[in-house]
Amino acid sequence: MNTREPDESALYWAERRVLEIQAKLHRWAKDDSDRRFDDLFNLVTDPAFLLVAWERVRSNKGARTAGVDGVTVSRIRDGQGVETFLDTLRSWVKDGSFRPVPVRERMIPKAGGKLRRLGIPTVADRVVQASLKLVLEPIWEADFRPCSYGFRPNRRAQDAIAETRFLAKRSYEWVVEGDIEACFDTIDHVALMDRVRVRVGDKRVLALVKTFLKAGILSQDGAVRDSHAGTPQGGILSPLLANIALSVLDDYFAQAAGGPATSGWERTKRRRQGQANYRLVRYADDFLVLVSGTREHAEQLRDVVAAVVAPMGLCLSVTKTVITHIDEGIDFVGWRIQRHRQRGSDQRHIYTYPCKKAVKAVAVKVKKLCRQDVSRPLSVLLGRLNPALRGWCAYFQPGVSSSTFHWLSHLTWRQVIRWIRRKHPRITWKELRRRYCGGGWWPITALGRLFEPGRVRTTRYRYRGTRISTPWAAIR
Image 1 (cartoon, rainbow, N blue to C red):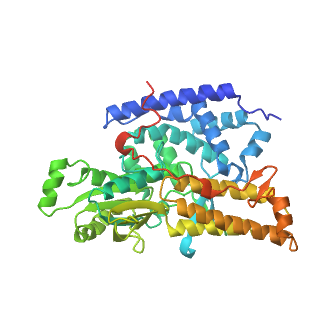
Image 2: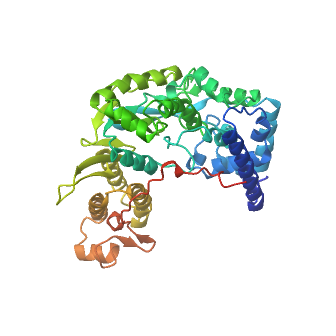
Image 3: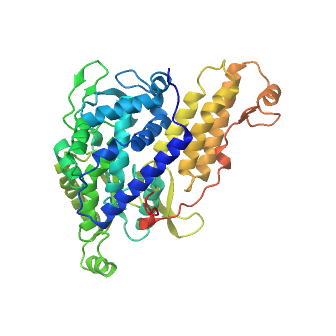
């Protein structure tokens, strides 16, 4: 049985080769905005690209989840072996016999009682998708606009929040809060492939992308449905394809009058003439259009945005697309952005802090974890609580979150103490503190203490603007 994993040396040289080729692709795409790449298929099937793609799939949290074939990463590693698997997969892709199988559908609950459709590809499909992404991403990163932040390298939600705050402080006070209705499920395949063809001329790569789009869906009731639109959320390639589709919105506002391409004196002239200026901030399918003008200008944008995304088969969510003034506050990617008076003074500032929905979500998660089986040791409970609390606090650390963190500390302490009291109904405070708090008041075990959100010091995230570099910019 071949269970040998690729050694670290082979992986290191593969990653180095991939990074160098990606840097070249990105540089060529950046230097020539009209260039179409006609010889990419050999890169997709290159052993180095497939090895790095395997590593991406193996290290992903979903590695233990199988597709419709029931095969997981560990089963491949302990069965036929990674080298044999990648050699076989490479030969299938090269000779054209590779065919993606339908993704396994899972419905994930969303806020408001709705469900999000998640498509889980097989491990083989994930590896090929990851290899495709390694090849296509550096090309398209040369074209993507700086106003887009979701699912892009070196970019994060905090950048989108920082830009929103930066613009709101500079007269962009009316906001169109936009949301694409079922974005990943409704993207038109023909329109999407037309945009991909702008940069990719290799017919074999185009055919491979199209086969993934048309792979189909195995629903939870066992029926196989054809996929005539959309790119299943859950696939490695899906976020990149969604960004390619949604870049029509970025391109429109980048070139529109009053947009970022308009010079400063022209924007001032437009405002004096009663015209508005616009800026777009997008994170995946959630976006804000900030308007330096009046509410009427913002109202007009709703139909404009709908018309821009319509050719891609997309439509705006009627309930989630609203127009708000920054004084009323907006919720965006888990943050609340609002201008109000500073306590103790008459000055008004724009503050960013966790929105009520995000606070409620973490509170529900803490309570749910603390309602589980009390027969297990406290260390098991802390092993589940601490990563959730640490990740949530790290996300909201660059903001006005101190009071929220202290509230979360109190809530978590109370829930853990209740869990201990359910475990030992007759325990006294003295005994509880001795056994579970080390003589103090905060729960602690031999493996570590309960994470305390109240001790997290908040910071101010530095606005990076257009200075965000790609992973390949410094490589020559």
